[in-house]
Length: 113
Image (cartoon, rainbow, N blue to C red; front, top):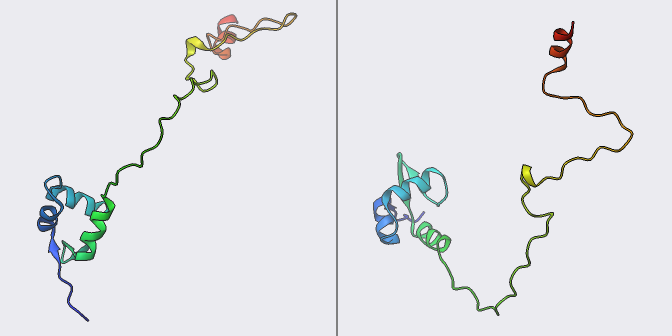
């Protein structure tokens, strides 16, 4: 089996560039977001790991697309409704009015007797 050369987290941070710190590398390894080896409690990275990490963070320019028409205004059903904007319920004629729900019914009964 061929020996695999590895680098440590400090060396990886240096290879990735100024935007990447050792603490970021440690955090990403701990959260298992980047490929790595854990050897004797230390993070290690192969050249393949470095290539995968670089590919994960690669950004390509967006293709030029014609200017899109502005998005239509949201319909009333999609707008956020607040308590003040909700319509009040209507009571059909000929029905008994709703009782006041200010106090629980057991308190009303106890106070009435």
